[in-house]
Length: 156
Image (cartoon, rainbow, N blue to C red; front, side, top):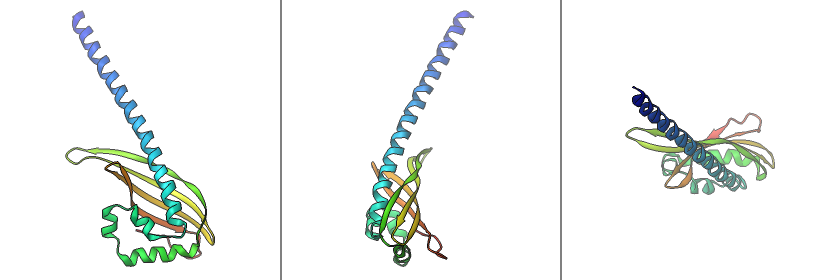
């Protein structure tokens, strides 16, 4: 009986140590993904908002976003936000990356951020959805809320 308890205790110890290592790896990987995705957003938003350049967005967009966005919707978004004028101050972004695993579908990495910017003629709050594929972050959603009176938020 004593030998059985020792074996059982050893097995539990192995499981606990393995779980601890797994949690440590996930936390480390999560922090790394947060830093990567934030750096991507902190470079993408100023490039897009500097002169509200749709090509800057499309260069960073997922193939699905590029394929599904209607040219008129993209034009309307950039016509609306260009009324803010050029970027004066990028005030940073907040958000985080998420890892998920679905049996049969595999794993995916995504991130969601909210960035704030002050432009010549108003302020913008930009909501950005990202995905990471083949080691590269890409924009999968882009929505801008502006301080222009009566202007609804716009996005793709």
